[in-house]
Length: 288
Image 1 (cartoon, rainbow, N blue to C red):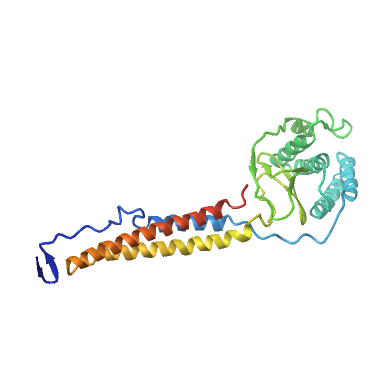
Image 2 (cartoon, rainbow, N blue to C red; image 1 turned 135 degrees about the horizontal axis):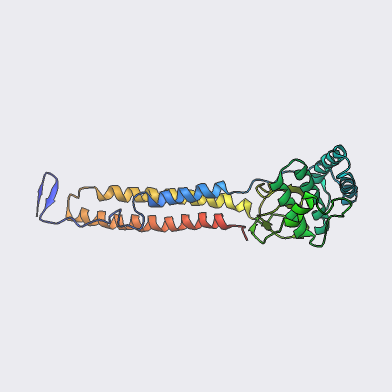
């Protein structure tokens, strides 16, 4: 064995672990972690918003709905004024309403949407009203048989398509007067959070109000830990990659480089698994 220009001859260079053949691959782990981390941060629920200072019990809101029923078909101005009062009082509801009460709110929303010629919104509201109170029909004195409102109401058939909302850190979620997190996707919803009390009428495309989800306080540390661990894993991989390009000066040096590379790749892969575990846990934390 001889050395020429710093190269070892007569001793074939043992192949170091190839980046392409390693469990990581060029940039694969880093790209995967960055993608997961960005998606997790984007899906992080917003912090809860303070409850409105006003408090309106249902006993005070019900007469407003009675007035809307009485004004419909008789005085558009009275109906619009009453609906404005309903809109102002709805976020201030001081209690969870019953499904029947939720249906009344949906019917009022549907009538207002019909008045504004927003038939899609009216249909979504009427479908929610029928789902919450299937036995209800408009009185003929209020909505005659041939009236287009009645036809639209009768044709607004609810389906069972839903999407699951995250569990709140405190209290429970109520949709149309029922304790559930399965939000309908094809019709309107009366969203209520009981701790702190919060109410909002939602059309199908509307996002739910911001609230702190269960486990939200742990998700960000998990995401940061996953990001830091992933960065360390990627750094170790780059060091291993750089060492494969070093020129050994002796057979002992060659063996040391190979052993060091193996340790770096194994450690990098292990840290990559930990990072993926942290980010994945953060993604699913509190979803069920």
